[in-house]
Structure formats: C-alpha cells, structure tokens
Image (tube, rainbow, N blue to C red; front, top):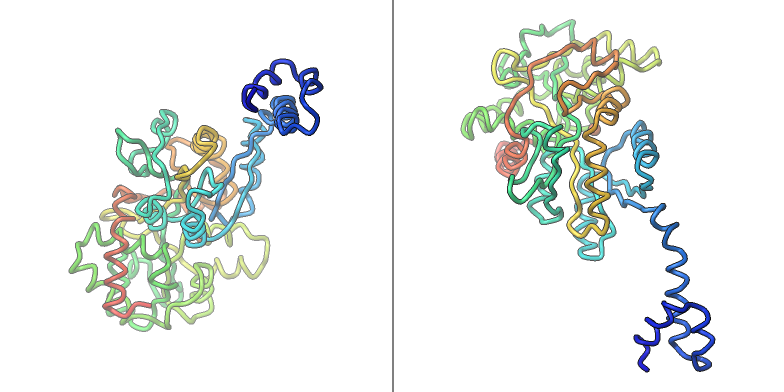
Length: 368
Ligand code: FE
C-alpha cells in the first residue's frame, strides 16, 4: 500500500491504525501529524490571524484592532513601516509575502502600489454602500483596488501677526508675489504634497500647475524640511509666514494638554483653502487586499469593519481624521472647532495618478 493510501486510511481510524504500521514507517509520522493537526483544527479556526501591513503611525489605532478582534475573533498580526517601506517589502517578498491586508496613508502611494501589482481587486457590497465612489479606486466589474477609510484635509496655516486669512484663502495664493520669503513646506516629493499638487494639476492643468509650483519655490522662507508639525512650529516661531499641514496634526495640537502646544495654536491661523472654488484638497488613508493574501476573506472583513460606523467614528474621535462614510457622528472637539468645510470632489484615484507628472514638474522647477 502506498503512503498516501495508508495515510488516508489512518485518518479514518486514527491511532489504532498507527499501531498497525511497520516499525519506523514514514507513514506513522505522516499519519500522526495529520491526526494531531485534525485535533488542532477547532482551536485554529478560533484563532484566525490576519497579517496587516500598516503605515498608519497613530497610537489610537490600537483600539480599532482590539475591537475588530473582539467582533470577529480574528487576531491581527501587525507589521508597521512607512508607505514606501511597505511597498518595498511587498515587492521584495513577492509570492512569499504573508501580508493579507495593507493600510497606507496617502493616495499617491496607494496608486503606486496598484501600479506595481501589489494588490488584488476585491468586491464588497458593504464597502460600496458605505464609502463614496470618490474614495474608491478600481473598476466596478473587476472590483476595488483600494479604498479610503479616512480623509484628512490639507490646509494652510499662517502667522496671524503678519498675514491675513484672505491672503491665503486659496492654494493658488501660495505662489502670489505678496508672500515672497514667507512660505514653508515639507519636501515637495513627500506623498502628502505630491497628492496636493496632483489635485491642483487636476484643477489647473499642467502649464498653470508648473508655473504655480515655480512661484511657490520663489516664495520659500527656507528650503523644504521637516514634517507637518514642524511647519506649524515654523509659523508660530516667526520663521514662516505661511505653511501647509494636514488637519489632524493641527487638531492634535489643539487637543494637547501641554501649555506650549496651546500657545502654538493661539499664534497660528488656519484656513480651508479654495472654499470659493473647487474646495479643499482631501487626502486619504486607505486599505487594500494584498496580492498574495492567504486570508482574503478576513482581509475584506477587516476593510468592511473599517468602513463601519464604529471604526469611522474612532478614526475621527481618536486620530482627528474625517470619516469617509457620510453621516458618521463624531464628538471630536477640535474638529468641531475647526468647523465644516467644502472638500474637493475629484476622484482620489485621479489625484494619485497625477503624481508621476507632478514629480517631473518638481524636478524641473527645483522644488526639493
Ligand atoms: Fe501623517
């Protein structure tokens, strides 16, 4: 009898059969292993594990993962890196990648991941019903490539002692000669800025966008450096008259108990740009199913959880982001104080797709 047939018979009779095998038979080991793994099955089913690669760098997310596990019994095994690090890791791992689901914090990078074939399309009536089409990428028949689970507005902050809100109420004005020597930005190639410029490209077209970027370079108070919070600090310290930041960094300072953070917020004004035209640029944090996911079903379940009411509220109340699902009631005092605003409606996938062209413009105009 060959080993396979012997093994299948053993599966039927378990240990009694093992005793009947010739001493030292390889089938004994195989059958024993099969018997043990059968015995372990119910436990494994309870302890399903979802491998999450996340670029979200926010402590409040811990509660999201705990609640998902509580609701589904699926444990989350998390790997954290920045967006670029996660994409590089997925590339390097190839078909051996253990990743099931991916969370990135920017449309430019999500679009890049899609282009590099690192995701697989998925379908979910829940996600389609909860998240507006503007924040979903992919085609309707094949499924979604990635989906925005939260948004963050990219706003302009300014030194109230020397700049008026009306001087900076549009992105276009960042290039106005009136702001010469006053503009501070983080690197132009950072995904948050790439996506902002990708949005502007959608609205202004290539020629005007490149001229606009050139104008911003001419207005810089210093060479681009630091993160978004550093730009806010630069305004408060007087080094910069005007800067650009994602809303959640500002809201985090607004909610801080530290007197120096409160002081900083008091010195700085904030405007939601382009309220009189196309609306303020909003970027996303978004999710995708990994190309070689072994737990595809659990990955989709996780994305559906993130699109649900509880997670959407937690993203807003915990990390000061905005929900992508409409009608979610948040209690965040900082976001309430910032007030409602008109957001752009350009599809986020278009913004992502524009970023390659934007990078070439940045290189031409010397925007580091
Ligand atoms: Fe960030």
